[in-house]
Image (cartoon, rainbow, N blue to C red):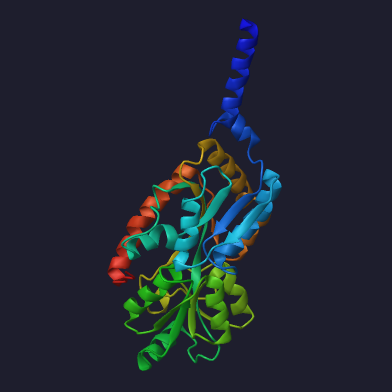
Length: 327
């Protein structure tokens, strides 16, 4: 009887360890079902393109489908909140972005999530500038010419963005403040729709992610006037920076990062970090991202966490200086 009781106790202990969050056994069993990768913007934008490239390879690495779930709207707030409130079991992860995790906290007095408290950072994937581009019908051939045109025709030129609070929305607002022009902002539910309407001529201007905009500039569906980074892009050196084109000090760069809900077991976060970093640093994906104007970073969870905190301070100041408010 005592021997049977001892065996039963041992079995129960093993079962409890197997189900305990963050245990070695549960970590070894992870993942046992498909994962959801939430992209807080509509299909077609830079976040979406990068997410899908990673999801395809992560599916192969984990042996389980990684399904991309686009939850656009409110400048990335809706999709980001979806990740924050998901079960912290490693089966829901998300694309964190500059707008959702660094800019929106300065723009909105009340957010449904806290960018530091409610997420477990996995890795900072890459960063990339925007291309200030116009529809071919716009007569301006340079940033200086566009500024002159906007000053001559105030409130007649419209610029699209991925939504109120999105990084390219703030890129436009900072541009307006720095140049003294008055453009009309038209928010969309993602960078993809914002760019498509610029191509269609429904709006005259957009600050589009380089990863998704450069092909349309090269096919002449859009005319690129300048890049938003501090230095010229190695993949499009013919495009001057906005800063060197008459707007000194101008710099707006978007970044992409992978996050999980807070309290996700560290063993699972570390597993995802290893797999995603390996994928990002693979020759194929690194060359692809670099060829599209992105700078690959692929850092550790703690380094990404520190980066988010530093970005909150940086963008908080930028929002105050540009006097942009949405509440």
